[in-house]
Length: 81
Image 1 (cartoon, rainbow, N blue to C red):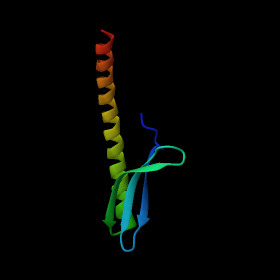
Image 2: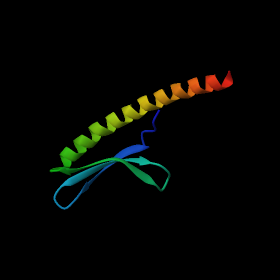
Image 3: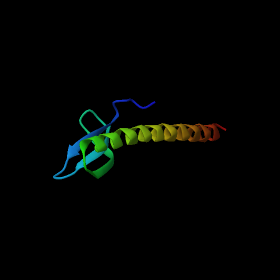
Image 4: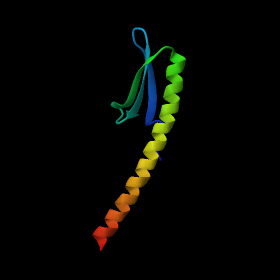
């Protein structure tokens, strides 16, 4: 499972538009931008997009982790034979 605090989003205003970044907490001091989109007219639009994308992003990560775990099991079984 993904720690709920590991992924979050930031909404910030550029000169005329709003931007959103989906960020991952890599270490206590370091964050990594996983996805970004700019050009929103309002903060509400940006926040709605961020919440929807964050949910989809986390689900995608969970599926990816499950696939990799299966591949790892198969690889480890082949090595043990």
